[in-house]
Length: 389
Ligand SMILES: [Zn+2]
Image (tube, rainbow, N blue to C red; front, side, top):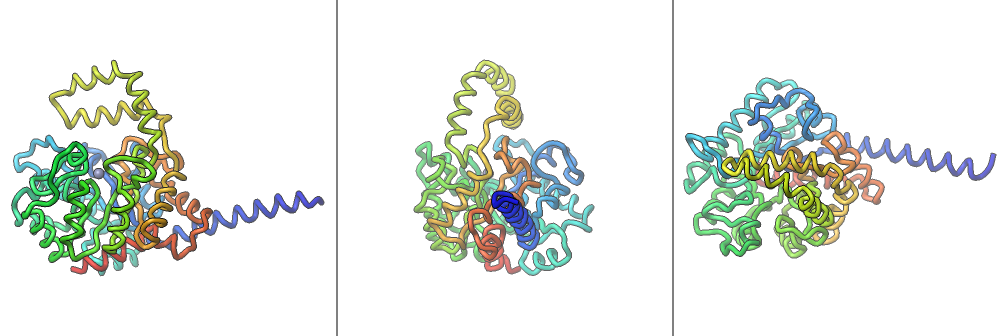
């Protein structure tokens, strides 16, 4: 037997060992995903209780991916037509998730504080948290904030891409809108602090982020944001912001959206958009009066026309590395944005691939303790500090 033979066997053994170690760590860890848009599919009438052959997740695949805590995003399309406006639509989304949970109590549970969360995990169920993406359902009435607290909402992203009347979004600030938080916006921040609702700064413009950090007493989260240093985009966080969030004790949960993690994807997408410009124009014209449908058609268009435009799992982990480098190991987490993004990275095609992210962290030399912080420990630290009731 040659030395080469023994070397090959040793490499295979080490590789298998590492893979087993990664899946053990993933199983043992509390895996938290800070942002999932499955409720959009629910509002379209899809059944997420069964395994779907579309999208990135459902109740079955979340378990297969080893997710222990999932924050479900309650997002209201900007052009929503509902008898009670944004508030009514958000209520409907909450109703839908409440109903799904009540039908599946043997495997999922709604949790609103750290005690409930720990109890739920002890029972081996998926802990479901409710997060409002965009403060529009609050409107200008503080009573709506109390209403959504009572309904179980435990984080609120103050804006989506569109600003509220009291906080400016990243997209609007990038387009030149001045703002930050108005006096009412500050009031909302104080009330969220008192109630114990996490402030989510994803989607906020830099001035608004600065104002929030100056105003809040609590650590904040960025539920689904990546690093501007690695992929320049108004939705991503600059190194200064990463440091400021670390100073506040908060956590930045990395978004998987290819455009947010790899700038070359945007360039390729733009090139291809040009090639298919005619087809896209026809679709855009057809649904010009129906913005909600247009968003969906654009997603479908991008998914079918550009399936080959992907970033990779390794690129996602580059963003985790970057936050660790700039802000420290205690300030990073995962906020996939699954089922809200049109394309997922190669290697992270859906939520069942999450254990591969753990394997990549292990390959890069992270210790078990630090991997567990990234996978969910950091979020749990912030959650247990803010959401005690
Ligand atoms: Zn979002």
